Image (cartoon, rainbow, N blue to C red; front, side, top):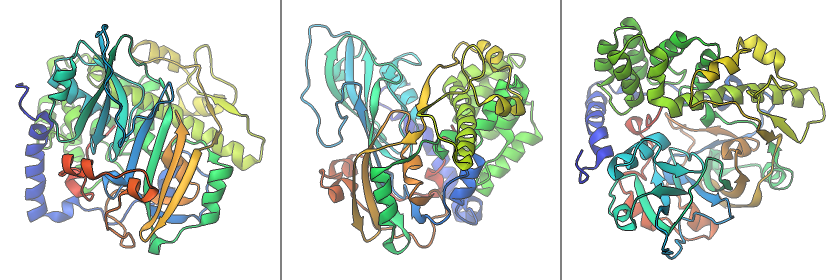
Length: 468
């Protein structure tokens, strides 16, 4: 594909046109009857101990309501407002850059960049995955790419800022954490300052938040089927199972998949109706179309998502175990091991894993070269650094830093019942907010110009960027 083409815009164009036609003729197909209840979602992912009296708050009405800046391994902030002077080097094997992205899923962004730069899949190194409906900045490393070539990239959702030439690379997990600046839009602008003060001083519990489980809130269930060794079951659920909060259009499409399931060519034609939302499904279907017997190999076409399914299942097990420990009143250990460990099931998880039918997870993982078990542990408590907040008419802007593996939504859920997605509750005040300016740390004006078509109010056809 020619480098001058805006790949993502081309990819989205047909889908946007279809959504506009549907909106004009059958708008009800793009509308949910009510906003998803946040505590219902938390219950689905194993979190059952948060108090029901928390203030209602809405996040991500605009991508810039959720700002994420990575803190690198050496403690450097990948800042949105302060770009370091470029450092040249005699060794130019690696180019380090800050990637700013807005309103795009990780795997879509990196796929586009790899295509534009002529790099193989996995040719861009990064430390962590950043949120989709957000304005984010993170450090990446590229081999064999020049500063000039990187600066020439034009993309409506991405901006690349070269930082330095050098050697080496970046590995997954090579970060200290992330700094968040989040606008929480509350009912009549009210919130419980006492709960925020508790968060700032004591912290909360470190559960895995809803974003870990995908837009359909089923990534853990896909991971469960995967680790049961039920590959056909994984594929059937992946294609045909709607999310509990899907709009009617997406439910209809998945029902259509179910009606012709196993006819991969017909299913691919159905998916091509919305090639952006079902881009990953199309990749799997293309592999199945080429060789229907290699169902396990077809999942390799979306290996990043399959990794997320495994991680989501692990997270679900942790959430359930942590919830019961808290509710029992037992003294919590400082750390919990991840449940999918090599050499056997860690203490405390056996009954959950046995009940899920995933006891033979190690044998299944061994069949996928891109999956692995882990000896990592996670802290049971969630403590943020440098917590600051400012009240605004719409609610509150929160600024804080969390270590790697900790989720901002998990942190905030101790003080707010967090709503997001469509429809937007009628109590949400919709005026735009510049969180950086409110907190006294610059402004997003530069990004408003560069991402003018992206940093806009949430809308139906922009709400299905990824089904990770």
